Amino acid sequence: MADAAAPRRITRRTFLGWWLASLMTATVITGLLPILVFFWPAPPKGQKKGPINIALQTPINQLQDGDAVKFDAPRNPNSAFIMADGGGDNAPGELDFGGFVVKNQGKVSVFAINCSHLGCSVALNKDAKTFDCPCHGSRFHLDGTVLRGPAPVPLSHLAWKQGANPGDIEVEGIVLGF
Ligand code: FES
Image 1 (cartoon, protein in one colour):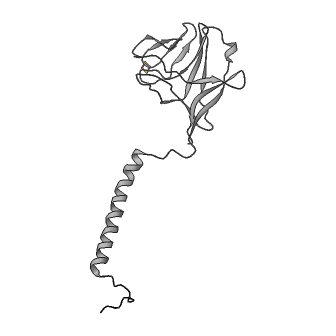
Image 2 (spheres, helix red, strand yellow):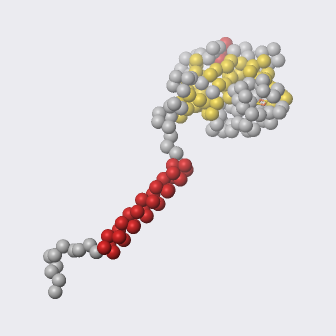
């Protein structure tokens, strides 16, 4: 009769079974991790979405009808704006690094600077009161709609609100953290 108090002996078969099971588990985890990271990447350290305060060169209340003022995303910390809508080369949620505040027929709008054709930065044509793209000749009205292609759709809007100071606006964006 076996002694119940005697320590249980681990057979070679049990040991090999556990060793193989551990090895297989480790292999599966090692193989799955890169896939999981691909689908759920960790946000870069310090990245934060939210309103970005911009001090305009010309405050909105000093803009004449038909005027526009350009602004850039802050570099310190490195930040970008988030497109609220768009089509062509632009899309909601895409990032851009500049924009225009426009006063047109009494209405104030804020546009991302990216051309909807292939993303070049448009420039204000003060005489014609249009936004012109230097890359392939697209032109946009001050309300963002296309005056001349190849740009297929209007400029993207940026979500914004008046800042605490009269010359400031807050534009929806992201601090990139790198
Ligand atoms: S990128 Fe603007 S016209 Fe092509």
